[in-house]
Length: 125
Image (cartoon, rainbow, N blue to C red):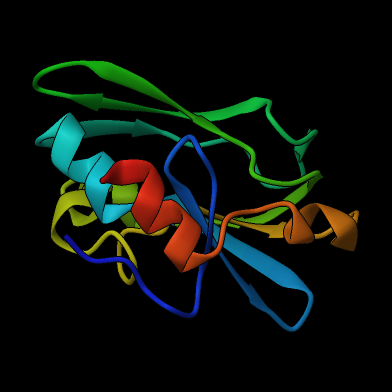
């Protein structure tokens, strides 16, 4: 199970990669493994604002339905349109092709409260 060193994590198994003031968000390798085969993804509209902890997306797998929570407060600036046709990218490439949304970062301090790769690794042990 992969945990990347350059990402921040949540206790709900989302990951965050900050690049030029934008946070790219997806679900972790552990989360996609638990879900099994993702068959449908419901992403938010671009421009929609979320507070940290709000449900911002829904993933349906052959086994269950899972909510994805906003790891930070911000506005969706981009969604991964590829997932509409290829939801399985979340399984095959959770950190690269299977990202969900990109968000503006409203409060930098929220990033400091996210889990480090080491802390996330302990959480899922």
